[in-house]
Amino acid sequence: MALVENKRTLGAVLSAVACAFAVSAADAQDIDFGRQIYTESCAACHGASGTGDGEFANYLTIKPSDLTLLTKKNHGTFPYLDIFHIVDGRTGVRGHGSKDMPIWGTVFTREIGETGSPYGSELRIRTKIVALVDHIESLQK
Image: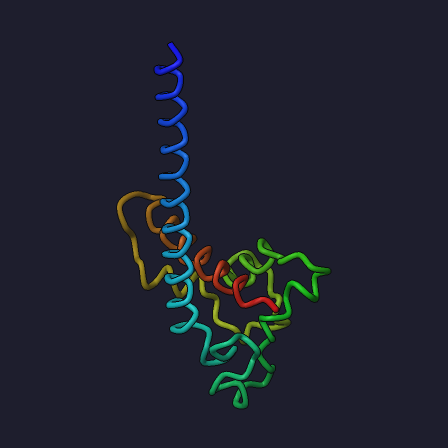
């Protein structure tokens, strides 16, 4: 009986370890995906490091935000949902004070088009935004 119990325990431990590695790999993949989206969509204005010093920053009417200070400005908590809505831009939340920043939810919608099901394209759009916000969170000082 003890041998059977030990096998169950070992099986549970191995399953937990396998899940932990799978989640870690998925998280790393999301960060890489988010970094890619950031580089393609945000870095020109916000800069590679997120400090607002992108190559186009000097040509903009409103200076791009320093994305590395979002947690600090929010009393030590990254404002994930607020940043998600700002990046998405389709909900009417305009954290930049104007519509100078592209509405990325709309841009991603055009890129992705209709896929799979009525909700398929929206899931892909939100996946991109989540990966992007995850990357922005990783830039915090």
